[in-house]
Image: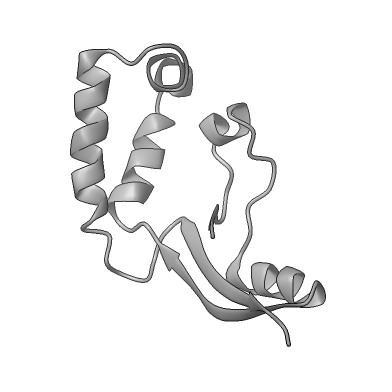
Length: 105
């Protein structure tokens, strides 16, 4: 599972995010509900984090261009390029949490 971490940006609020977690919070919440953490680490630095920051320079324009309706060819190209850069987010840092777990025995 992946969830956003840290501050909630305007664009994220507008698409339905109402809570972000920190590593300890996420592990604790699942542990209380019988789910054991196998691995929990941050991801997204630098390119995913940069994309969030850039999208929130002008959040209303970003939401209009990328979060509603049909994507223009330019928007599709930008998503394609951004996706390539996401593979370069190899440091265990960033504004996303990856959580791997299993049900406690």
